[in-house]
Image (cartoon, rainbow, N blue to C red; front, side, top):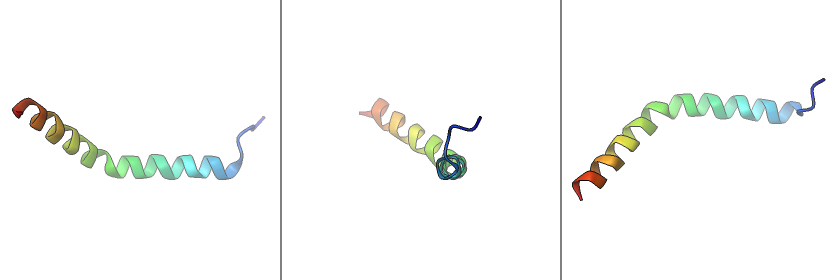
Length: 40
């Protein structure tokens, strides 16, 4: 009952893994972006 191709699934897993690795960077960037928005 798998309708998704395997390469797409693997790509999704890679994306999730990368996003997890960059999540702290994303939080920091969001903090800096919102901070600069508040300052200016």
